Image 1 (cartoon, one colour):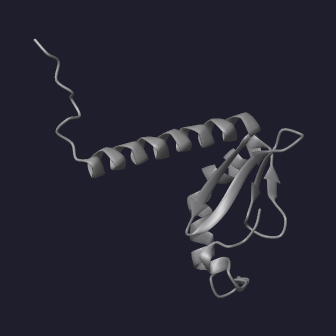
Image 2 (cartoon, rainbow, N blue to C red; image 1 turned 90 degrees about the horizontal axis):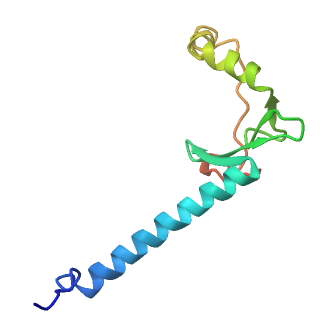
Length: 114
């Protein structure tokens, strides 16, 4: 009995789309592997690109928030994250007293460097 090609029923367009999807997944996996090897990760939050990196001294640096990275050792980041809702509540309670730095041209579209 002759074997049937399991992809024979797919159109050329469907095959090309499947290949592009697989290529995209492979590129994303390669990027993630490269980031792990380099001790960094890129995330996008609200259209803003942030880069997480392990510093030379073993701290976590977050690039993309401003001119300089925010750098803390892991226990300090964990302490901050454990009170994240308190920080958000405090900001809400003191909205009128707190300053907000105006976005620079292009920042609202996530076009700053890291």
